[in-house]
Amino acid sequence: MYFTEEHNLFRKSLQDFLQKEVVPHIETWEKTGTIDKFIWKKFGDMGFFGINYPEAYGGLNLDLFYTVILLEELQKINSGGFAAAIWAHVYLAMTHINAQGSEAIKQTYLTPSITGDKIGCLCITEPFGGSDVAGMRTTAVKQGDHYIVNGSKTFITNGVYSDYLVIAAKTNPELGNKGISILVLDRTMKGISATKLDKLGWRASDTGEIAFDNVKVPLKNLIGKENQGFSYIMQHFALERLIMGVNAHARAEFALEYALKYMNERQAFGKTINKFQALRHTIADLYTDMEICKEFNYAITNKLNNGAYVVKEATMSKLKSTSMADKVIYQCLQFLGGYGYMEEYPLARLFRDSRLGPIGGGTSEILREILAKIIIDKKEYKPIN
Image 1: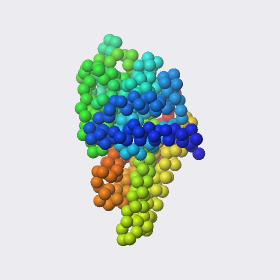
Image 2: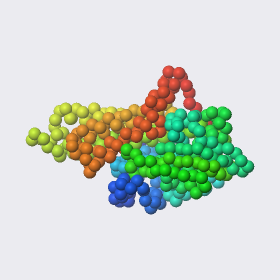
Image 3: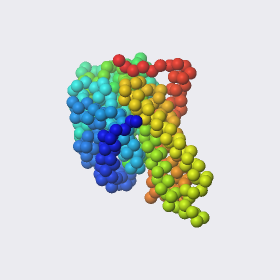
Image 4: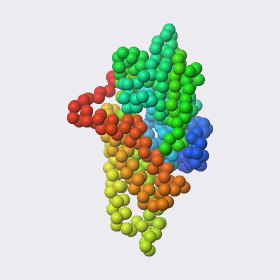
């Protein structure tokens, strides 16, 4: 219904690439928390960063189901941190550059992002406010032909090793959320410092806390219109949340496939454990939940691909799919018994990595309130013209 023969060929070539170029290095990156730079260039050379971007900047201008394939296959090499580093670059930082950036900004940042020569990060969350975007304290004050940026951001994926930062800052603090703007900063600008955070999961990715101390940013580095940043953030949250929903169904599917393989081989009381009714029925329930989320996510991707505004549906996708993935992976670890608790088996890492799903990109509690406003209060979120 959604995937053509071309999509399937793309999936196969991506699987081969990941097994050859990425999987041999995953254990090292998980231990060091640093992804070697060479892999970014290899992704760029294969065109994986340009899937959804215009041909004018080196992209392939393909539909969103190629993105779904990229996300799904990244989850199935069992490094949530590596997957996050890739999709945070391609679908958080680059999304803002492409959607609202000037031609000069696109030439400077989008083109080398597609080739893998520059890595980006998106900086919205702050130490004093996560999902409360309007409560941010970072400021960008005009002085002559520059903005002077002061403040801090935290929990930023690619926050330490990226080459540029797409940041949200208040250019008019008196206006609250109507005074936020988006700027792009070069890592080399004086006054930017980053501290690497030690995390429960996503160990391969560099999650950072970033400080801005009187950073001089040229006015030309403004992305879109001044004081329109909150609207841009809200518009792009739909894609981020759908991405996290797709990630969730993919890692749940991977966990189930691994558990089924294990249960087919593991014997107890003279038979393989996939013959015990209690386990069989649990698998049936978990697989049903996963499949329902997957089909829902595909349907929302199709709507977004056709130009629909899917704030409600994408919010539902992330809320339900990340909760489902945690439940599935918890139970799959249980199926493995003591082996599930061992680091040499994939479920231990998968269990840790999955736990960020209901937290990052808007907590489940915040998502429920957004949905309550839409469903009960009849609040409407509309796209920017």
